[in-house]
Length: 180
Image (tube, rainbow, N blue to C red; front, side):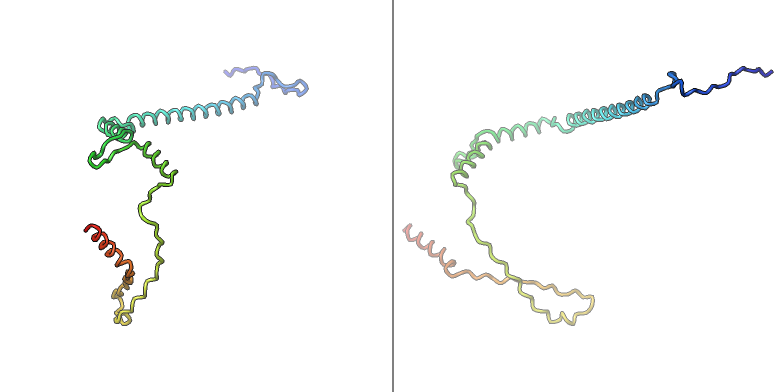
């Protein structure tokens, strides 16, 4: 009923004999495993970068490029306006010039010292501190909870110098006298 299987006793290895060549090499197995994992990670990163590139190209093509013909026409007209000469008003002598030519002319004027700055140079006025507003008569005995009156500082009116006030009138009188 029970069959007896003959087994031989397990023999122990004698260290003098060296190692068994049939045993697996642990270093080679670990090296193969590490290299496989590293190459798998590199392939996954490369595939992900390729996907991002393809995705960005698709978004640019489908969403960001102007396919509307009217918008393209407006951009074309604007580009033409910025690169060509044109009369704006022949009677007034107004001409539109290309942007590049305008830049060149401006740089030439700056180099010649002819740059125009609208307005004359002026020295800024010193700020004077606002005068303290007189206290309101009912402010000290105001009921609690009632809003306090707001202090409003009014600047002092500037008095023009007499020479400045009469200068325009004198110049106008001289011009009128020359015309007669």
